Image (cartoon, rainbow over all chains, first blue to last red; front, top):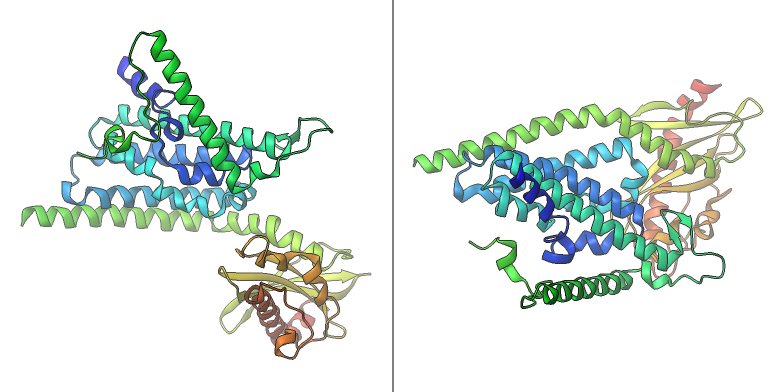
Length: 221
Length: 190
């Protein structure tokens, strides 16, 4: 049980995908125009990530090493098309909002990264915990980024006006440059927090976001 | 050799399992997706095309066959009489097909108006084809609709010629279907 919790919780803070390991930036930057879009994208990624981790972990012993990447992508692609169809069938307005970024989940590095780095080496229950943790971390990050941009760029939160009449929205925050500005500031903040907390613990601060390279996402073998 | 065989077998098994499950899911969700598209995409476009309808065009829709294609036609009544019909045409735009709902007046064969249903044109440029400034030009237009650059009366949006011509060709496609189907349409609703 302790190990399940450990795998689950690492995705929530220590390895939260867009902010710590800096993976999956394309949807992070593109769809976070509003908090609602962030949640929607995050939920779609949770669905794909948990199921792909579970399936890959189930079949990990029968997949020959040489074709493993192809197998992972086939499984992820199937799940993405499934979620695309389900979104069209049940939440069409959200599907219209997210548009091309739903099919693009298949090339989201988080999916393949978790498959290769974790699900292919660990039993099913740990793989599900890992996928769930990473997915929830991704969702929280996207929702937070989306709320921030929506709040500053449109003066709204989940579509409700909250900033009062005298607030002039910075329209740039819901345009593409705003995504980079907001993400940059958040990454700086995250690094700042880790440096301060490392100093408090009396350890040498290690800044990893952005410069972590392939070592920390464990794709290289 | 054994490794080769196992690679082929495992990959084929995974791909065929995914193929079968997706085919099943696609079939299962097809009616739901059609209903969602009607409600979220075609419904609003029809309301734009025939705002004064005193019936429910979406609920009274009928499918017609034309050259093996299935075409959905939405009737538009005023005062209990069939005043017009709406149907969708597609034309190639800058970022894929542009779908346009076109309303036709059945009494004099002119256009009631158009409403863009699906498109993936560039925001701020080609996407302007969905704005009233462009779509207004089609209200009451006589039938062979053509862009001004090709000798017609429709002004293209500057900087978005391909999108504008795509919208025009979608209207033309709908017009051709309408003319071919007109006898059947009149029979079905009058």
